Image 1 (cartoon, rainbow, N blue to C red):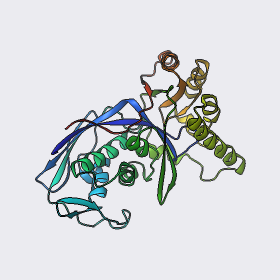
Image 2: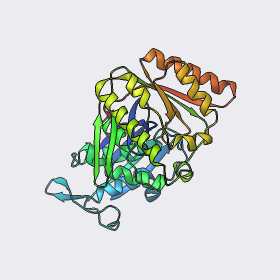
Image 3: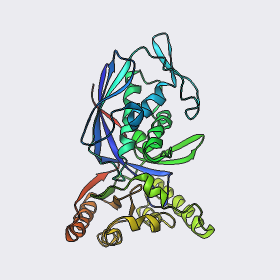
Length: 330
């Protein structure tokens, strides 16, 4: 292969109780990317459609993630094999590849939407280049490189969006250092409804309002909900999933940044949602439900709320994507 076209899915991070550790992959929303080999060494972002983002490699999340991965590879005969190095410190290590890569990005996920725009670009870049190099890394091993794109975007190398984007399904980041990720399959009838009010809320800004300490009581409640949500996913217990979608710590602060949040959440519950909360850092709001019919009913009700207050929005109804980044064409 010399060229590959990808679908890079949107994601929901945090899922109310799992700040920075839980995420899921969506099926119907995402970016597309084209990555091709080039005679010019290094990584070049040659085209971005749908967003005003930097083309400079070092200032683009896809470029930064790709460079981190390429610095972790050495040539061995006709193959490329992984090498160990500390991403955070060995930034000047040379790339041992005698050709380069061009990346085209077609953005359908708006920056600052809260459904993993930067993650889609970061994950897509490392996945596509890995494919063109003969898959020296597993999907799970690619997560640490995609995290470097997230670090550029938000100042924090978090995996709660890039992990589900690469692996599909639900993911639990048990530990970030060393990276330990668990993929969890989704119950078959679980659907997500996501509404994105058309305001931009940068992840870095949404993080700046968070408290750095929490009470022991709140922490205990949050731990219980994380455990309950994971247990509900494994046992296909939709009621337990719903009871566990509660946020004691982050939502009370961030919800004030999102127009109509309380009414949207109330409307979702009234129309059959198992649970509802902030998608990632916002401003998107998600609801999980059992069955497509209920998810579409929730979407219609959410739309009515923003129609009433005359705030433009986008809305998505999606099953959980079990696969993550996928190949459209080669």
